[in-house]
Amino acid sequence: MKMGREEFQQASLLLARLGITINYAGFNYMAYAVSLCMQEPDRLLLVTKWLYPDIARRYHTSPECVERNIRTICKISWERNPGFVCEMAQHPLAGKPSNTELIAILTTYLSAESDTGAEQGVQLRMPLEEIW
Image (tube, rainbow, N blue to C red; front, top):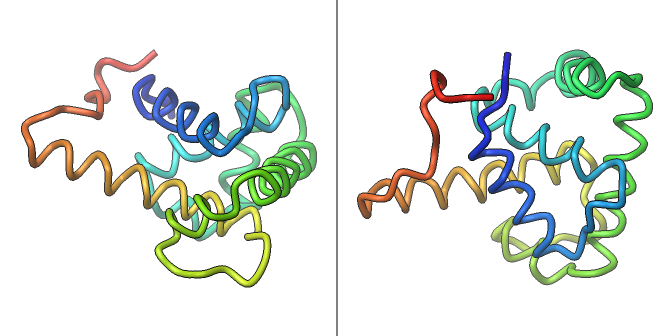
C-alpha cells in the first residue's frame, strides 16, 4: 500500500513539534508508520508482524532496525517534550511511551485533527487516488 503524502506531511510536522529532527533515521520511519496507521488503524494491532515489515520494505532495511530507530524517536520525544506527548495522549503518562503507544497517540491525535478540520470544511486528507 502506498502512503498518502498529506498524512506523511502531517506526521512530519507533528514530529518536528515534538523536537524530533530529520537527521534521525527513525524520523521517516515514524512518519510513515503514522501515515499507514491513519489509513488503516488495524495496523496498530500487529505492529511487529505487519507495520514494521512494511516500513522496512519501503526503506530497504530490517524490521529490527525500524523498531530500534522508532524506539529512539520515542525516547527523544519524551525527553524533549513530555508535556506535549501527555497532551496528545489526553491523559498523564507515568513514563516514556512504548513504540506502539506513541504511534497510536500520534495517529489518534492527527486523525482527530483531520476530523475536526473536515467538519469545518477543510480537507486534510488526500484521496487514495492522489498518492505518491
